[in-house]
Length: 618
Image (cartoon, rainbow, N blue to C red):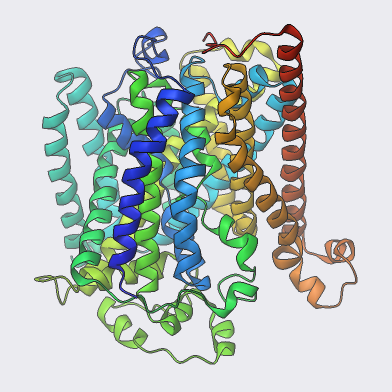
């Protein structure tokens, strides 16, 4: 099937959904009004609360939410064929992810930039607030560690990637100082200069890659890990305008630019999708991961369709920088449907590979040997990129190969397969690194709020000291797993945990709408909430037998409990953590349901119709 069909359909769906369903959410569900002051103005402190140009903030928000998820998830889900992932990306981003991001960002902006856990405590109950806080801290630490491992693996022994990405830091610092201190508001000038410097940074990395002194910039995995931890800590402490926002804004140009270039490449080259629409692995037993199509395609593709991590950004850094309420729609819903488009492009890049080559890259050699397939183009691809590609699971390598293959097929770009492959690897690393800086700051906020539940005075503690302390704790939390590498044992549960957090946010968002007097529009969040609960709770339970305890069950363990007793410590941790988050979701949904029924009965007894809007004070 020609890939052009998927590009056109996904682009049209994104635009039409934004102009129709997005406009409905803004006008009817939230009733956005620029006359309301945002916390960026009412609490302006020049550090965290800063009114930000919508283009700059869109770049920051998109860079923060679009980590590796919309790239890696669709590539891994391609083992089911191109059709299941494509449909989930289209439908999920429009009716689930976009609504999820919009409602949470709106709720946080109207509550002084408060976090998801604090909104849960105020809108539902202290029990739901505490359960949400525990789930958030766990998911954040695991997600950041997992993403940081992707970066360390991508930049390990890569002078090109290290140089190019390192140069984006001083460039961002200069952009921040120029646009906020030297020439405030000069967005166009700083954007043009920043993009040019970014291209020069990429070119510098390419030069160093083949220079005699390239050894100065080659570091092992632990060396890269130290640099990433230091960056995450510093970015979390510095004012958002100085490093985090301009760097994410700068990175978003590379991300969006690379995706648009890939989309143009798909249109011009129009590669044939060699992966079939549906593969035999929809029933399970796939070489990339063993789960069946339902429910595993919906947790494998998280970012790009719906992601709980987005709720942390939408109630973390972004609401503190919203200048006007009308900016909520493009920054939340707009960024989400764009991320869905990114996921479709990544899916196309993977499915343009021959199935045997795709599975040879993404499956371990001993598993691929059992498939009875013979590689077709892989030896030639390895010669062109100058690296061994077989048996490198995880999705990043096959995505880079697919992107490079499309880029090198464009006019005037033939023969540059090696260049484009390494460019794609760096492109993926930048996607992830922007998540590290924002995620560490959000984790810092959450740790202080969770601590405030035990010691209330911590909530009022402000200044540099708490920023240093909680940033150090946040960095130490995910940094420990990066350093030891043990987080790789819980990769299978990351998708479940992330989607369970999305269900948390949708339940809380429903409570927000009901308390605003918008119960008649609660279906916007209730429908995706019902699907996420059924899907992710099922996936969480199946993960026990399909992933975590599979070796013990295959060895003859008579039951899940017996397999758990015989399992190694990492598998036990996976099982326990998954069950804990599942239990927390059941608590939150049950508690929320009680509050919804109580609110409905109270309104019926009072005989009061729904108000047009009930605004919560900050």
